[in-house]
Length: 294
Image: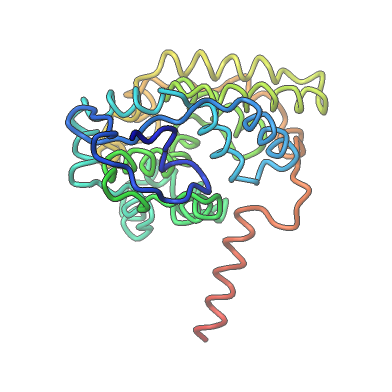
């Protein structure tokens, strides 16, 4: 008997035993059977995400519902690259050194690492917060240890999200997130991001019909197509470089159209109607921990 439609990166998936004969082997690594495409499920999740851009769970739901074979193709390319192979074999744990703020402070002023640190501190974010958001969404990266190499890629990609914000120059406002998703879609080939972007574009245009939102997204797509494939570059080698040099090495152009839209307008776009954002939840959690240890 074969096991169909199993993907350990999907939210709220109860672990089931997958017999070795159902493994799909890629570059010598076992991967699980692919999930079927679920467009209706994805559409419902997009509507929820548009209502609240901080509802991280819906991003996972959409991406997995529409991923098809794109994840396997990305894993094949990633593990064929020397750095990607090191990431899954060693493994290289991006969340550990990106979360080491003492290390990041030793990097030169103006470097990618210091810019990333400033971004994370300014937004009250941590790599652990991203992984906690995955946990809230029902993602358990260690649920299938037999596919640990496969799962390492997706943890690596998730932790890279805020680093890509710094590299691309897009902020955490709704338009910045959407532009970063356009960039991510081009880098990963996952069609799930395309639906998020399409619905997000419609929602933002309804709020600000006279702003060049569509042009900013088109620019993000052009910039992504011209850039190098970031996932095959050693992050630890990039962090000490001046930010401009890191961007030049990856051939990432400045987002001039996005930058031209007034900051106040971007801040108000799809402002979440929730009590707390992800950054506010992390801050509250740190304050509770400090009180408990006092």
